[in-house]
Length: 393
Image (cartoon, rainbow, N blue to C red; front, top):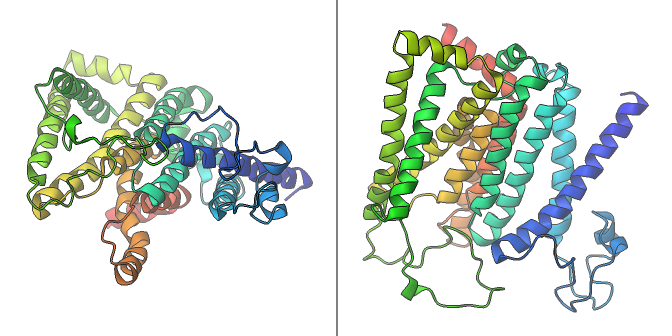
């Protein structure tokens, strides 16, 4: 690489490490409902504010030898690991996208925009995985943020990059008339389902009765949606009933998608108008991202519901559902499904080790889903080529 590229690579790595430093704040504070911006970082041992020169990513942890300058309390290696991991992910994706032949479409003008959307998703996945590893929960706000980035990025992308290039290389999700109709109908169905929950006509699954909530210090009780359900290990608790409640919530989404597809794609004037509307980059991009979101959610939610019905215990968490929805909104429906089926290969070894050494059956699945998403991002073109060869025979 030329000297200029070395500088860009070094800056990308350093910038990623800085983002990793912020992700450490998110990992610690978000599940504890603390502000991400105020107060500033302080030592948990002595409470003294951390000066800027003691808060330099990677370097400060090494210089301080993983101990507070004032009281000597140990600093978790997680801070160094997250900063290094984020820097390596930012740099690795940059090199793969712009200095290799693995993602040819990224050579298009303004390909940096796709890279930016992708690293935002990966940063969110790192934060969610860090929390999942510690607390076995994934804050939905992280997933919703990444999903919003996917919606906006896909809607805007067609105005920065040639829409034909986006379609050819699948740089961002783009809807066809059929997938666009399915996404629109599913979106309307989701709104109906949420309204039914709001009015009380449908009940939330795994809802904790107020009388069962015991107050705990804020430092000890992570307040996030769908944390560990207090009755999860109660043999008398009816998990299958909770799965049925979720099926009832999902039914308007399914019905909405089917009805919209039938109404908007049936040959005629409406179908012609709809196909023309999908030529608008913002519409095609947004609905493509929305369809990816629903497919990403669906593949995990189906596993969750079917597993719960089959085994009588909660199978996978709703955090995993929203995490894959966020991934689908950015990388598209096909890659989200492939990532879901790749994830078990990453988690198998860890699961066997945990079961043998600690006899822990519950697995924080978010990190493996995240690793799978990163993998399909890098190998996207190779995967597409292999599937094309498979179906050409």
